[in-house]
Length: 428
RNA sequence: GCGGGCGUAGCUCAGUUGGUCAGAGCGCCAGGUUGUGGCCCUGGAGGUCGUGGGUUCGAGACCCAUCGCUCGCCCCA
Image (tube, rainbow, N blue to C red):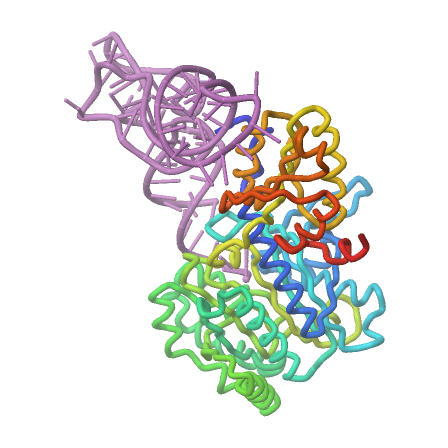
């Protein structure tokens, strides 16, 4: 373990390699593939934006803005922030590109996010999210579709059973505002009994107190006015239609009237797929509706709904990583074979095979390496084989060997192991 | 920002109340086997015991500080 700063990753950052990277890729690629099937187009926005983009969209008093952003002034004197989440960036892109001329727009994204926090299990300073955003669709079906697509991804990853879908509504801006007023009035009367954290929240984000873990707070909250009682007719109908659409797909959910999302821009639907397997970090895929966000960013008054999922958190839930590809290992014996193997390796790679050819070493050493790499076949190429125009194949699992004429090699290999790149072999 | 736990080889860990305590297993390298991996045998490399200070005749063990990791709070994916 090195203590030299140059040999140490920055706190809260991680190198991804080997099995860990394969899990990570599986999550990102499964997410992408399924999202595309649901009609979301991939979008890649910059990993930094003008600080204002996040400050405005997340709310000036949110924790993310007040203490978690990586913000710096660039050489041109502009305040720049590494994105702590990507919804704001996608909305900004929609405005910048004028995509709101043709709505709705449905996007999928994958990439790194940055938050200056104390690292914990499933929580890093540089972490990755996949997410989808549906912009310009006011219909409750858009909320249900986003949730359904998320559930589909979790299912495909084999982690759906490990999660619970919690669902709530915050109502439209009007309902939410009236409720907030009533809640604050109720809590003010009991302010002295609230926890220190919650007294602060009373100023900044009173709805969050509903979700407090403090026992005293919970007792007070238990008798607080219910948001459901403040929903206007529009909001009730909206929520009912979201649930109806989920029911039709038999997507199970638990209604949690205390589920509140941390960011200011949420309205109506709020949801979280949570798990108990990740310690304190229960939320694995979460989001909601954010009507008003695009307008906040200076765009037209266009609604939106979406979610983000933590790639590292999902990776931790994956039962097993996909195995690495099993290469073919060429084992030349003798100088002439050495030269020939170099060309053969290139040819087989062109055919779509993953081929391992060590730079040097005795056959025994190369075999050991082939074994370690999980090679499926070893191709022996010695003086004898060279002279007769054949290759000796050895199946590493069984130890069975056979001789194959060089002219028949491509076909034999294809039938033995298939090829990774059928298009390439068709061309050949 | 606030609390708890932990830092001994690349990895997982032993190290008895301070007195051959610098070790094991795995991994790695080499050889046994210069045309054949896994198993086996032999040998080898690799550690300022996170760092700095203190207590002591003596510290990997005790004390203080510091850095790092980790778990939790806050917040969130």
